[in-house]
Length: 313
Ligand SMILES: NCc1[nH]cc(CCC(=O)O)c1CC(=O)O
Image (cartoon, rainbow, N blue to C red; front, side, top):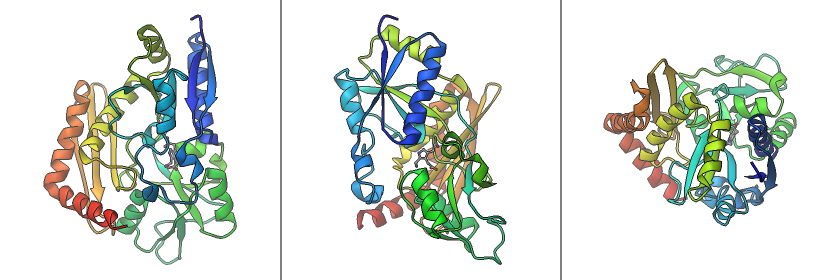
């Protein structure tokens, strides 16, 4: 390798952690790199909810502009934050090994028990999936919208906004807040967002093919890739942006991929969750098959209703 790989990333602490992680993976394979921090529209408008500024590309546009003109070679993202379909010029070339994919509760208080309906509990979250899941399984729990990075959210919680935060384990772990984890939530109830826990490496399709291959060799985790391909194929059919309570989690046992996923109505009343399985080489087909079954089981109506209600906002 004669030149350094230019890694583009957003500047949040989580994004930087992910970029350093990729830098390390490259280094272990003998590939030098440098990190280039890029400000995105999504980082600038922190006070407006993402569903209002339009989720499409707010965190990715600037990164893709720089991929396109070669100022960066790769862009590093939380896989979960990536749109299900990229523009034609771009591709995800690698998914890093997935972290534990659960949602968790973070709290400074003791005795937090989501199942205890006799005690009032206020959880901070700004995810429609998590809010709808709570409404479905734990209707006694109240939620409050909390935005900002993890440090800001923890401060707001400690100031009394809520009793606990409902978050992805992966982000909390990466930021070093494991000691504040009060509970790990059940994957069957809180089935995570597509891609939760993995880091995706995006490039322009025009990236030098030898370099592309080296990066894949150094960073891609094939089992994670199969799982995420199935989940993302499911999401693609549902066109589920981050403002729709869609969830999916694939698991891999030997050569068999199982994909569990569904959708919940915003009020939590209707939750469809189904499972399909097949050979791991057919990941994308499995995602499409799950989408077909979820639609046929009433998911189409749930999705249409959510889209209708969100277009009025
Ligand atoms: N929605 C924001 C976001 N994007 C990625 C993560 C965590 C890291 C990951 O899931 O890979 C988080 C925070 C959260 O949902 O708690």
